[in-house]
Image (cartoon, rainbow, N blue to C red; front, side):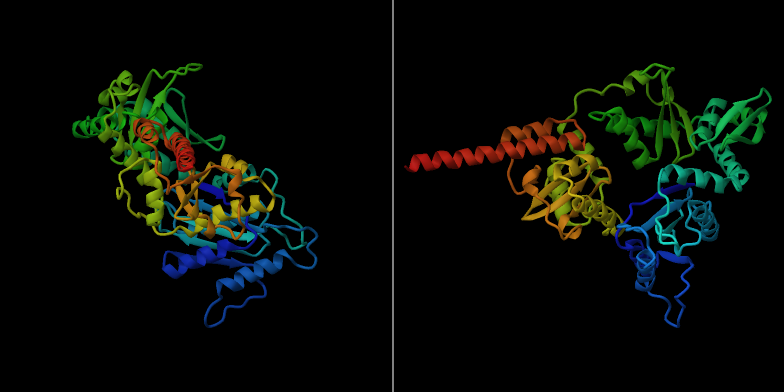
Length: 463
């Protein structure tokens, strides 16, 4: 189970987002508690009624504090479909009680439009006495609250963890333990049994003989070994260890786990956990560690294009303009990227809340870009926010009605041509998106200076 608190907001945009999901048929409202003045009529309660009530509650006459961003918005998700809507609702209500929102008006929405069932929780940060609900160390307390809720269900959760691990094809007890540790379960060996520990206590145990028997039935998946070696050979050149791990896991469901001695930086071995095929493989079955940790020869232009195309395709692309910007950033051929996603209103609102909050507080644009991992691009007169962390691009006009001072920060002019030298530098770079953005910025600046100098020289010749 994972709980994530989303950013606060001045308006209760979380209600609008979830009600829009209901309209699309991808969400349902599970609970609307403590809305004492609202009564369900023949046509139901509109989202503006919920929003209006929450806004009125948050600025009531007896409100003793001014809370500029009163929305509390959180998401609780489970792995896959292990919890249904009503099990998640029960967990969410216990969680809200522990976080101090149990007596407040709140909404719980269920979503099943991703690989993991999850619920959205929306409430007000202002309590019935008009005071702000304590948010100090909020994320730490949030995790603790979730642990306390799950203690009541930890036996069932542990059975699920163990059964999932036993469902894999593994060859050693160490691999079995690695599977459980990846699920947050600590495993201790008492000589006869494996004791499984979660939330600080022993929850259950399993006879070691059962694990040994399972490992003895292991069969090496030769076809999959060849396939994995081919994948690593294809994508390894030009990628750092961290980038390769991320690519294999997100794209192919294969987790690379490196093993290191305490106090040592260099790994002595590695394991592949193939979630897609429920296999655990010793790294040596697929590729020697020394071969994995070093680039397999020079990177060809075709390989580099394939790698960059793979990285770019992991971004959310909702328009042709965004595709064109990413093609420039990753130095890809025109038309190589297509729109791959509808607009994500939640992601847009999240970026909008952050941007507007910092603009309202007078934070300088360069500081905003640095602290959030953002860049600014201009294409055909419109400015776009490039969010490297979320792998998304947003037109700034859709995020804020304020006008940032673009003159104080570097802006990537996507309508400007690169000089041949700058283009070659980008073509030969093996860097990730941060380095590519830096090289592109330098190249565009250099091209702009060269163009200005050329115009100046022409004026001199005319004289």
